[in-house]
Figure 1 (cartoon, rainbow, N blue to C red):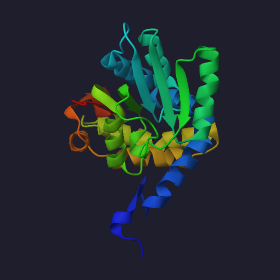
Figure 2: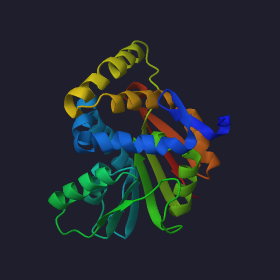
Figure 3: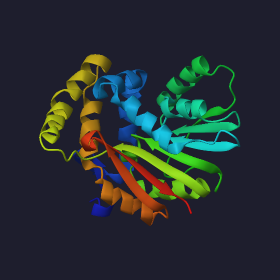
Figure 4: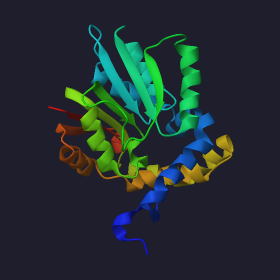
Length: 253
């Protein structure tokens, strides 16, 4: 029998901890080719505004070297914006555990930044980064940390690879706390998104998991406490769109 400490959630399903990563990989394997299109359709384009807010908060350096790590960013959305906002001495490492997502990102990068050596795509696990300690000026993760089986390990690794004075920014779905909007959002999530996923990608199950995983993610106050536990200071969050999303921020001081 599997001990309680060796289990976790995969959406609303309880699964052995060792199995969650494979299940998450299968989700993104199925949707990688149309991941960005579905983001636009599901959010009505709002994900672009949320990511703009992430970049505005980040304020990447334009006058000096700036080493950036974007985790779970396989298709390159955030990384491309960092490169465009930063100066010519910036470089971005995009890390994702899913090879199909990285393949999509590499193809997009070749079209958008042909021959640009400032961006590289690396397959790796957020819980055990094969990257040097104290190297990066900033670490971002957008809509990815809730898919990590052991979030505490990912936060500890984020803290390890950042320089002293480096910043951690996490964009993640949150908990709607606006009356009426919460009921509309709940109905939309469960009654519209999975059928939309089936229509666009041929798969409804991955999107059923995605909406369930949002409900299982810690509330923003609890996630801020997890960041503090990992060593980040000045951990805080900014709700957006009535709490649909929160932008979490912390510093390695």
